[in-house]
Image (cartoon, rainbow, N blue to C red; front, side, top):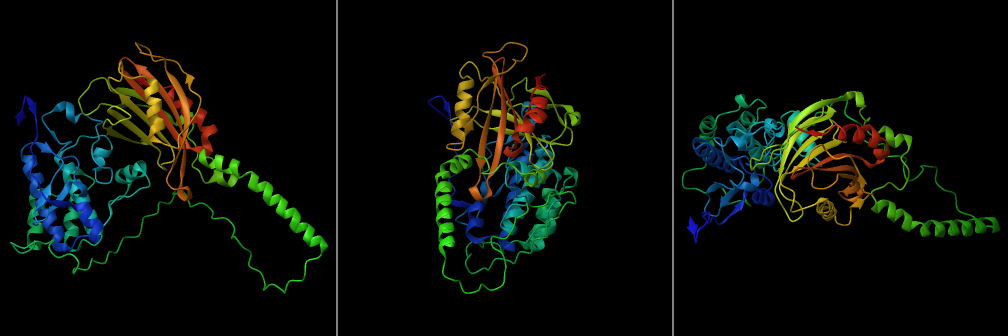
Length: 461
């Protein structure tokens, strides 16, 4: 509708909870609840697909369970009409990592089949109480979606064959929405009843999760180290301390005081994302081996945003075996909208990202970007010296620079300490950011082996 010349979108007010909220409250759905949700969302997607619309972000948070029992699919905010060619260019990945289809995660076209995979993944989560793919970070989740086996539906009962039929790696083999509704029909609640009306009296189903598949070349967990105590025979009754023993205790107390005085140094090392001790040979052996420059191959990718801008292709030398996926990032208080292409090693330890901010200039500059990175890691950003670096050929608004910063992700007990080598390259009105992320323990070695070898090969097409 129009109001005073401005366009407005008017939507139905649905008193409801999202499916994600329902799962948080009761753990997982019963078979009848799952059938009701699956049938309703399949019907909604079928209607959208007939109109030429793909949803692109089907997930529990976008499914509404109304107070009167109706089920609604919402948030078509990133949906696109298939007729809009600029919106379906290769390299555009939209959606939530745990629920996007494998071909979309690799930068492929978003089709109706991708919505069917996301529907299957959503129902997988609804019946088991957790997403089908869970990783410590986005990179691990994306790697699992692309390269991992499709997990067996847990706790899905008679809905399991339908969910498995939707979650087929090959898009052409996925169950059609018509067949989904046919198979679900006998499991639906009686007409006129609300499957969600009584929740507390229905015990959640027992979930039997399949054992995780362990790859033969998967890295082993770190050695937990020696026990904090030594098992010995029962201690004999202690004798009174002599003069020598008392002197020893006094010396030990002095040493403890000196060690305590160094606590500030230890805290500073921890805050900077560094280990208290230098990496030992045993520690380094648990990290993956850095690739050599001989393993790098020229690859072409596209960093085109969803608004359909032009000029987003680039080339970069990186290992051919590394997984590539594209991501769209909406604008926020720190950064404008951008397109990001990720190249991730099989272990997830190393990552190369190429981020493009179209029309970054003349409104912003490099200083604005650096401030945004610092704001993204409040209290955990530890920047390095900014170093001038060669400019890209062609017009540029300011000179290129590069810098190193460290981040700490997660709780201290399970923190991920990473070093980010970042090269900022103005090119016309765009800003390109080429970043190599490595474990902090390998920072010195990775500077030459990865960052210098890879970043210098970047070139817009």
